[in-house]
Structures are given as C-alpha cells and as structure tokens.
Image (tube, rainbow, N blue to C red; front, side, top):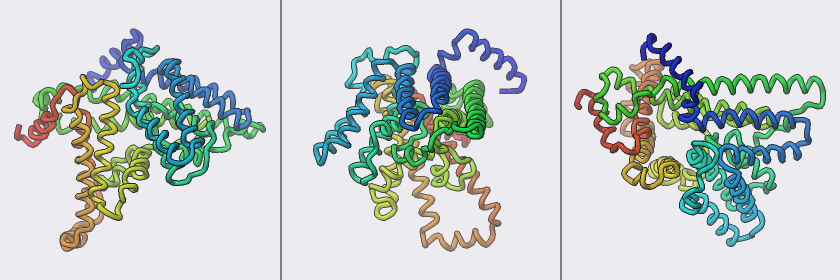
Length: 439
C-alpha cells in the first residue's frame, strides 16, 4: 500500500466503524476488549475487598464474561464443568478419580459433537469463534491441572483458585496459556488501598495498564486495517497475482501481521490482569532477534511453548532419549492442536482432513528445523566446518546472518499455517516455486 492510499483507506475503515460493519467482521476482538475493560473496571472497584472476597468477585466476573461473549447457558455449563473436574481431581481418590478426570477432559475436547447443533446461537456474531479459541486454552489448563495434581503432587488448590485460574477472563479467549500453578505463583497480594500512598501507587498501576491496553488495541486495529490484505488472492493464484518483489515481502507481512495482532491480544490480557492482582506472563520476547528456530520458539507464544515442553516434550523423554523424535512429535501435537481449533470453528464439512495439512506441514517444518539446528551444533563430523566459520567469519556477522536466516525460514513457515481451508496445500509449493522464479 502506497502512502497516497493510506488516507482513503483510513477514511473507509472509519466509515466501517460508523456503519458497524468493521465490528461485525472483527466482533470477537471488539467484544473482548470492550467487555474486558468493563469487567476489569468492576474488579478495580472491588480492590478494597479482602482477598477471598475480591477473588470470588473475579470468579463472578469470569462467569459474566462467558455469558457476554457467549451465552448465559454456556457460561453455566462451563462453570459446572469446572466444578465437576475439580471434584473429580480433588474428591475422587485413586484410579476412579483419574479415569473420571480424563473422561471429562475428553468430553471437553469433543464438545461440538456432544452439544446440540443450535447451541452456538448466542448474543454475539462470533460466538462459535469465541468458544473455539477459548476451549483451546481452557483444555490445556485443565490437562495441566489433572497432570500436576495426579502425577506430580502439586499442592491442593481450592475451588475458588481453580475457577479463577482456568476461567480468568483477561486470558480466557486467547491466552497466554497459564496453568493453575503458574497463576498461583504470579498472583500478588492484590491491590492494596488501605492508605493514601497505596491508593496513589495503585492509581499509577491502573494508568500504566490503561496505556498498555490502548497500545494493544491500536496494534490490532492497525494490523487489521493495513496488513495482509492480499492473502487470499496470493494463495488462490499461487502467487501469480503479484510481482516477485511483492511476493517476497508477503511472508514477512504474514509474520508481522501475526505478531502485531497476537501480541496486541497479549498486551490487553496483561493490562486487564495487573490491576486485578495478577501478573500474567509475557507471551513474546522480541522473536525477530532469534538466531535459531529453537530460540524463536523460546521467544514466540512463550506460554504455549512452556506448556508443550512441560506436558508433551518432557513426558516423552525430552533430550534423554529419542530427542529428535520427541521434538517432531511435540510440533506435530502443536499443529494438531491448531487443527482442532479450526475444526471447532468450521466443522468437518468446511474443514476436511485435506485442509489439515497446512497446520501439519507448518508444525513439521519447525520441528525439522530444530532437529537440523541440533545436528549442526552437535555433529562431530561438522566440527571442522564450524571451527572454520568461527575462525574466518566475525562474530557479529555470524550473529546477524543467523538472525536473517531464522527470520526468513520462520516467515516462510507461516505460509502453510495461514493457508485457507478451501485452497489445496499445493498452493504453498507453487508460491515457493514462483518466489525462486520457477513458477
């Protein structure tokens, strides 16, 4: 988009706001930000309450968020499910409790098939999208609680703590993914307003949080206004619809768009949580500075990466045995987790098995890149080559070259990730061939 086009584009988007069509196209984010701010304001007003009373108020606000973004019926169902899972873990001893817990987890994983067809007809236009995103995060939290309590012997958490951690409205829709133990570890004593000095400090915290909230909203708006406008055209034509320079910039735009939008959601989640007494973890740490794909995944969607490492990679054996295979299985699990989310939005008819390949290819690309990076670093046969590079190439140049190569690979790996379900995965191959002037 040229600078001359920015003005007309902005005018058109502002007109969209006035007509309500932008809100219809981005209603999940709009409702999440609006209702999140409203509910957080109520939580802030409850700051003088004792900790237990304040946390029960927040649990109530979590239920209200589910009702506002979804429906009151589904909000009640979600709370009852959480109560049942907590009781199965904490009240039913031995193998029966473990079996019951995993039956409930499987029920949550397959809920679209268990609920009536007209369930997702609530009071928002993106209700199905909301529950699809939210249950992706919620399920991971529930799995972590079952594993932590039943297999790792973590401390007992009250029903209040469990409900607040798993249904926490600032992070329920799109993360960060935090387990009950992580939430408990990061919970502060809560906003203290017993003296004027404490009230002043709390007021500054609220103001800083409001600034980060506004920054997150601005990031999402700018990205949706101006970035990745040609995605479907490029996919549908195998890249033929644009020039080669534009096609080379396009994966970078995908990367940038996803980062700006996703980090914007995280900014809002952190901003809503802090005044309520919870330090939600950061989800991104300047991923563009990564010098390897492994480092990228320590900087990108960090909460999900921690979850995968703790509940998939390490239980498989980690680095102790079959390390490369464990990496591939972990990234395959990540791809299938995204497939599950898309299936809940589009259904099996709109998102058949052939469409799953985009996420699967993305996961395997990243897994293979990490395995290749380990081989490069550890293979004894490559030590002469590594030594020659260390001797003849300045450290700064090696550093920046590694960053550029990592950025380029990750950007290309986003192409199958964003493949529309109605376009065959072969489109990714055709785009790559055109990028290297072979298509």
